[in-house]
Image (cartoon, rainbow, N blue to C red; front, side):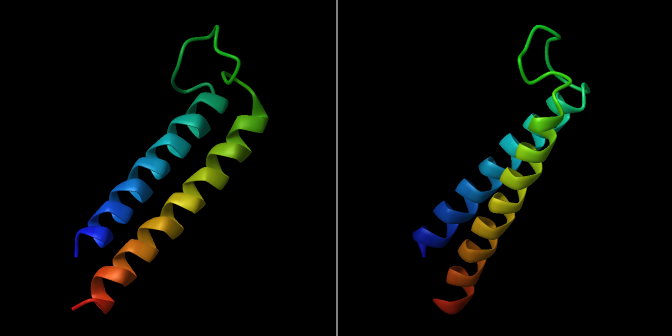
Length: 68
């Protein structure tokens, strides 16, 4: 039962990091001195990381449902 919650937590944290990277790439958050700021590569990286976070969260949710 604990495993599902741990995996969901990891997925949510991964999604949040991806969101931050995406927003920095779009020049919305972060210091202007950052190498990620206004860099279109980090928009793509952020989206990819967010997708991985959603997949990890989905796996954790599936594990939680299957163990019931």
